[in-house]
Image 1 (tube, rainbow, N blue to C red):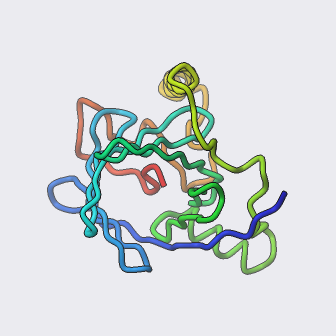
Image 2: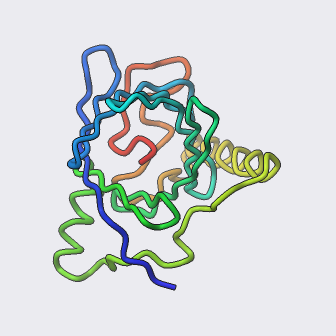
Amino acid sequence: MINRPRETPYRDELLADGSVHRRYEDGREEWRRRDGGTRVRWHDNQGASGTDEQLGGRIIKRLYSDGRVTYGRDIGYGRTVWDRGETVLVNKTSFGGRMGVLLGGLGLVALAVTAAQLPPEELTPEEEEELRQQQQQAAAQNSSGGGDVGGGDGGDWDSSDGWNSEDDGGWSDDDFG
């Protein structure tokens, strides 16, 4: 199955207090702050709030303050698939996002989302914990010089970006899609 999702570009602005103001081209805005190594707290201009958590397998868990949960998947080049493949958020701030736009314009990157790239519709607590363990192992390998958590395309989250639980002052150029 191949799906041609709606793309929603956004740009991030690092604020003086270390938080990030994310502006989507559809008018939505989010204010984001790192809350530990793999979580980001956010609230938006439409009254919603919650946390995004980087799990293993390039999966992102979005937990809304009202208890709803949805999952996204980082598919590289500053792109994250959400809403069962209906939406792709495109980070225009990151090198990967700009590169993805350039390559897409040249016809070198498929603009469709395949079934293999779709995020899960739901996960059990056990499956989430397994993905957290994968993420921790990948982060440990990355900190010892053994790998790249974000996939290496220049626009993905990297645990060595300076945003960890001890230092809240850094910013990743693609902070959890």
